[in-house]
Image (cartoon, rainbow, N blue to C red):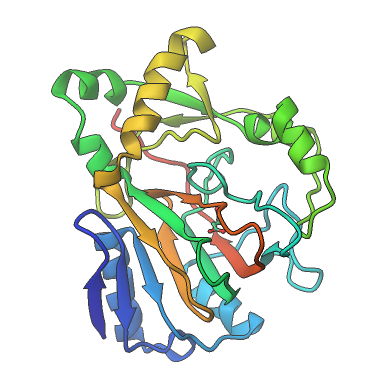
Length: 280
Ligand code: SIN
């Protein structure tokens, strides 16, 4: 297997592996490269839905999305589909997958089947480097903070309601559960590496525990802006049959909506995670 780094901060292309028939030694190599790079891209993979799910199972238990409908026969698999007639809505904004859950997703996988001729990239940002890039005083502040996360801001604001009221290829089923709030440490200790990573994002983090929304806002805005500085990012250009795996405890990501006239179809699964561990 060959690793080609995408940038100096995160992301690597892994060549010479058939993900559907990976030996245990190859799988250990993939796991260690995921920990090093946060996100891996494997071009030219030949998977059907069953082998895609089987690959996911090697990383852990698959989960059903709380809001986005999965495929009828495979509820843990989401078809991230944007026909040429729609504009993209899924994943457009910086986020760590399902950080609104008590146990946010550990890893996510996206398998590209139809890609636009240009555009439709996904951008990733290394949250370990983002934490390391803070001043000592700011680290002192965030080390002791917890943040409130919820899906409500992404799906319940007026703008979001309008966006999701349209008929789209992706369908959503939400109940009051999206209004529930969960608390996570702002600095997350990645398991099992022990790396310290920032864990706030513009899509799902609402405020800090023990602070009002207006007290939280300037610090939150600073952190989410800082966390996605270009120095911490890599940009993944998809090709059909390319598959990406990322670790949501190490990176956050953003789906770029810049391919209005074209179709894009990806299959997506997420692997169950654990309650994030903080510093204190
Ligand atoms: C996601 O946020 O999981 C989807 C990313 C993408 O479609 O590029």
